[in-house]
Image 1 (tube, rainbow, N blue to C red):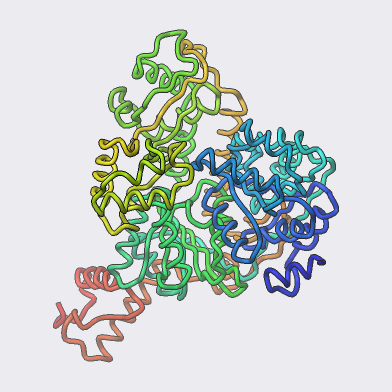
Image 2 (tube, one colour; image 1 turned 30 degrees about the vertical axis):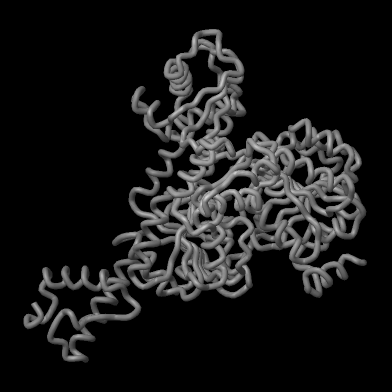
Length: 627
């Protein structure tokens, strides 16, 4: 089949969009290719279509497990064979998946970058017939990218194992320097960039300085812009609090962050995508792989650290081509908060060395010892004992990890584990009550290889499926453990630290330039760009796309600055308040109002009306009989 026939047969589209066909023909001809496509440009089509047109399997490297699972599921729903290898799978599951790829049973193998260095993976990869390699979120391989991942550097090793397989690198956000670095890091045989315009003609950018409260500002925006919305905030607890507040105001909302279980994430994302929930209040953990074209507004409750993050998140609005809005909120503290993030993310080098020394004392590690030693490490207890601010200490540990002194697994990477200690035949000789028997049946259905290796389990998800409480599930698993039917290791909310090398003196700690100085300078430049974006009077769309190297873009005509230049600027907070004051007085006169409780407008929050009425009373602007 031709590329267009594959597109029509599997996806039902008659033609390609934008530069999709250019990229497909380039990688299809065996050329290393870098595709730059903004969010919603249809990146997945550019590797899925040519892979189906060729013999062999396409290896897709992606940093997000949830995104891999979603894409595998979507491909299978279209009758396309695909599988994924990611952290958390048992050894048996990995072996089966890789063997099936060798035997030609799959067209797509999704893999996380952390898996690339595995000897098992590399050994199996040598026996696969690979058509080409796709690197999604390719900016992660660049030292100059805003989301650099050291694990991505393993891709160069994979290229050596598959010298004849071309590489397709895809990203939605890359500055000119990152574009060059991606091609160098991936060993492109020739420079080959396919670039789609980053201009979104239907997306109106605006920045609002908050005069009242951010919650009220969000509510007003949601009343102004009908339809589905995403509200981004940096804090996990903030997602819950804002979603609860909006719900109390009669706006259907839910929250989303990385700390939720997989089931909770899936259910909330599905409800929002169906339109059962109007507003998704989320951290930046939400959005990758979300296929909802009719999002009418994206509101940023906090200012992001970088233009790349902002452009990608804001770009999730209006992917259907219809008018949409991207609004960024800020107040007098926002700039200071942004600047503090630089020092919090990259604390002074002597502070990082002090954290290293304090960790060694905390774990009672002697000088010269420690290479390969793994210890439990409770960050909160450590910070209390040595008087460290948690955010700075956390980032100091991240820097020590990138510099090669330690490796540390955050608490969220740890899960409860279960393994059967009896064989299948012996299992059926146990006399079990109905409740523990249901636990056993659940484990046998859900956990592959559980008789030979530990399997990860989530008690909360088990409880939901089995109609029990989380405490009941935990107690039943412990009971089965006491009866020597299985081994159960409950999840520990404590991270681990592994010392990669022996303990050294504090003065010997050196943070390489590429790990510290260069990365700090890049973050500072991005933060300053975001500060300038808040304050600029030029077209906001042109400002953003010029950052990504698109210098000739025309003014968009729909952002707040373009409207202001045309004399159509959105009203300021003072002007909006003056208009509401007039509206209140006109309403009182027209409707013969005798009580303040009668003053209500369906498009303005009651709390905002109430605050303004209180001020107007103090200023004696209301008729005397109402006061």
